Length: 104
Image (tube, rainbow, N blue to C red; front, side, top):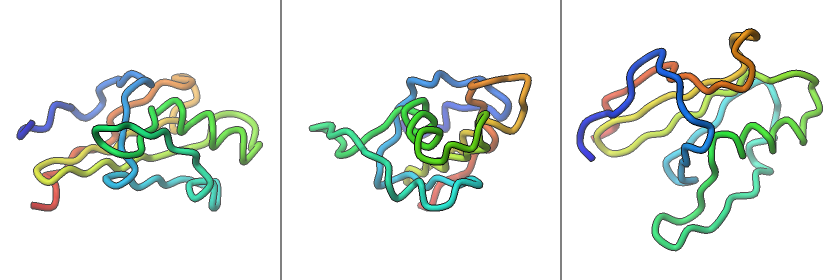
């Protein structure tokens, strides 16, 4: 896929999967990212859905409520920043916070 399929502000399904190699996770939760348990996918390596990331971080941090999490996913030609927890009225809804032109 050469064009970025996402638009800023778009709601994204929590079942959207990202792979470990192309992903960076940010938030106010300390080192929880390092403790994530990634699933093996025989085609693209280790993967997690956005909701699996959220659930694992919530279980590890015990912050109460939904923490602010940003998932930066970069391919060679485009990238996207998924976000959850920045708007309390949206609950566990993932939103496209930003898009990039990738690193190629």
